[in-house]
Length: 309
Image (cartoon, rainbow, N blue to C red; front, side, top):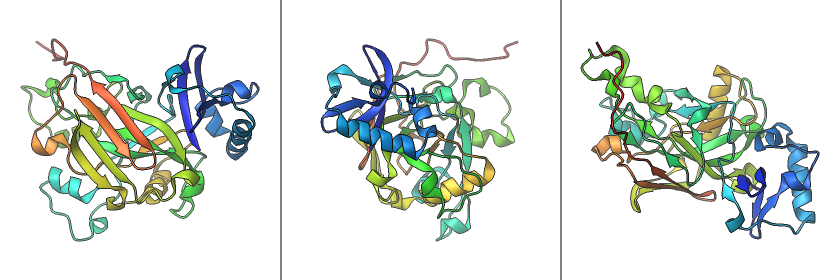
């Protein structure tokens, strides 16, 4: 199943996308869930009913009638993962990795706010506190049911599906200018470097696990203004999807609608100094999911410098 959240002339809805267009499940099911989040919370019976309704109805909306939104516009939690591809570690760190990186590290999750989410085609505002904006294509996992201390073998039953994430990063801060360097400054872009509005576009759809197949062998690519900057395969992850879900479920309870971005491969702007510019068009592609395109807005006329004397 390819699940979508969309806007059309009657408002916002959710449904199934197929070769004939978009089937508006909310319209066909007046007493059913009213949003994608509620739909996921309703579990397997809701999925089965959606398939039944779509099979019985010929009603479809075509692409000209809808604007795709983030598949989960209001996830309970948005979780990122730092440094989950060995080549990305090598390009961004001076610390050498052993032959088996799993002996060196564990998954490194961090939380992002729900306001970081946006959808296909949305403009990403340039935040007022950073001059260096970067891109990161990532496979995103969407949780389908409550998961607490689950094993990697149990993880698939708690996953609703997968989408694309562009984990935008502010690599520098203007409010550090002229101040003494602090011990934890290196961790900046794992934390509030990810917190700006619309810094985590996701989409264009949520592909259920039964349709996607093996999440550990998907080609992914990112281009800026049609020039490829990142190209890899999810088989190159240090920790696979199921291990990530298991690890995070031992740190916090995962609930339906939570989004986990599973890390980015090498090729980010930080490694070369080739950061994004205002107006750049960033397109992320992941095999069997589709394409997610967003544009970075223009930098602000003045950057934020707090606590002036």
